[in-house]
Length: 389
Image (cartoon, rainbow, N blue to C red; front, top):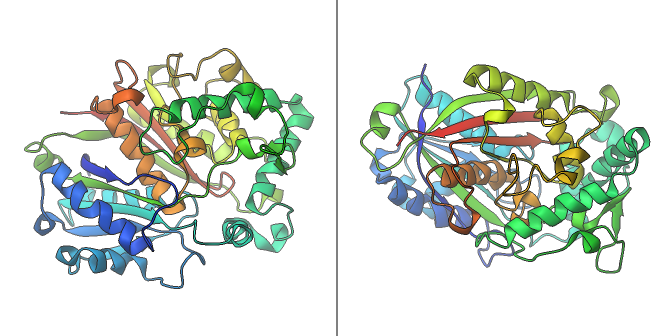
């Protein structure tokens, strides 16, 4: 089997959208993505839709909503995927398997979420559905409380890393200033991010507001095509490797300061691609909270376990550093509409490889890594992408 290529994409601005629901959000990207690829609705063999929902909307059966928003796609076979915060990449993998198996030649992947119309307290409880409620339902701070526990335990073992987390937040906000699609295009310095204040209160454990990603609306789409179809199109990005691993859902059954599933996903991707972390030009990684990005430095092999702070303190992950991480601004600045996130991350990486990232562009981008995870490092997906044409 041969994995398909990314041949086109589209992306709404992330943030508070006037679009009333996911149907409207998805309608904003389906046509533009196909136009970008140089294809039409008649070329699409399958729709693969990522929407978490879990209470954000009374309307479900989200896969069928693509055809409601775009009549030309209403009779294309559609399947909806859900895998917590990795929902978008789960849909992407479903589409890739569909084409690789020979069942279709062109697939449209759409990820979306409408979150901002839901009251904040309800958002926290909806997201807590990505935890193991039998043990974790009473965690203070909702889903953020899980990562507050992870940060607190990490600090107990390796010392207070609050300043390093503030440096990660400041880096991603600085990058997000240059992303016209980002939810928050505002530069916050390390001092602001590292200081608890009325504007930057503690949210859960040692995590402050600036350590937490944003509640956002948005949609993103990718067009995938079999290599023989992609050869006749304007652009093509191939998957040098992709991987998917899982860990137990309950935090009690694993070491929460070690993202072991993430490490396995990266190790599998490196082995399949025949590369190491030193070969990557950039990484888009899942910084739902700054402690997650720090632990992902360790999982991807940038540093040894317990030493993730070294990567940000020494500037390795800055846009002009050894390995730029989240040049898009990441979830922290770009926003985190759950179902759209994994699709968005692959769009951002593809833009870099095609030299179409404008002010976000990383110089000489040849090999991009993407890491998207569901829950507290439960489902982990790693991709290594490179340009074909």
